Image 1: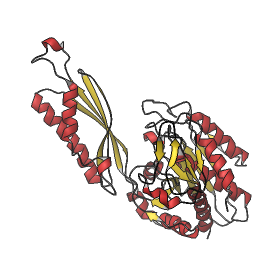
Image 2 (image 1 turned 180 degrees about the vertical axis):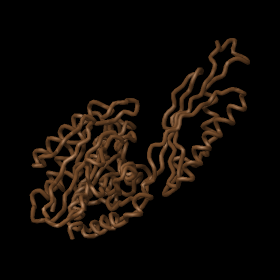
Image 3 (image 1 turned 135 degrees about the vertical axis):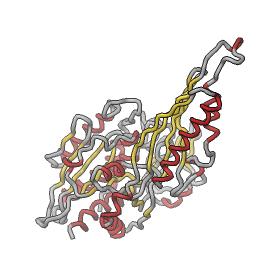
Image 4 (image 1 turned 180 degrees about the horizontal axis):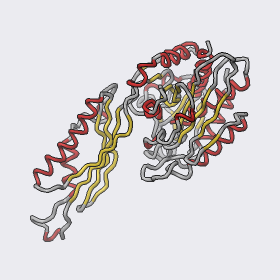
Length: 410
């Protein structure tokens, strides 16, 4: 249905453009280099004949594929983000094509002995005989979410070339800065004008998600007192040790590496400090809203307890909510999930309906008035050197988009 090689070529052309976002920047997009892909996507949409394609001053891209039906049909949107995570380098990405994968170890980088192995990632065995795109072991790949962008673009190209397929108006949206929690912050839902949308931002083939974490970012500021170590007795307060007490006082098994399914966690993902001051950066996540609020309370109570032990205000917190569980906004319009499930089955894909252990633009957009479940883009091991995507999964995701458009017209 979809030509394999043009899809591969398009995907590789996207991932070789560095688009890492930066949480320390206040600009939108947060990095200047995101514009390189944004402008490319805008031009490609124009070249496809989507004459209303536009890119605004914050890097948000929108375009319309006009309806081929005269019936009154809902306007459906498809959305992906073009930034990649700041967690691992996305500079100088060198994709590797593994054709007819044999189910064994893949040598990503012989010089550095970096191996993608089914011993570590057992789901690799599901893709034996397929074509995989991997990294060279020194960067991430960027399938999150350039696979989603590729699939939307290929679906639009196909529908444009096949006007005999009846469908309603399709809206396309590409966003910056999703990886730092800001992808939907300046998204103009009213201008987008869709009745509902789907983010193509899930992982393995079949994923269909309408639940996600409630999320917050936390900075823990720990003050100390620096004194010459030769004369420090009874005077020095080492903020690093106090920070260590704070870290060790949180539930050790409520961390990402010990949780799954709907279990929430505290995640320490950054630390910087010296004797005078240490700053800890946490994210907290939980699908249950009450548990989520309780986690914030745990942090506040711990700071209060440690401060009382020292009789000083040594620890202060900055907690910022990032997004909330979209389920409460999707449940009243569950037909949009049912439609995606039907489209997957029609495309020969077995739906895997489960909560997202993360967030997407869709979670924020749902609370902004645009219900927006999440559909698989096909990649695995996002945000690191072992990231890969089966081409066949991308082809199926593209077909699902087309099937959604078709089925919505019926």
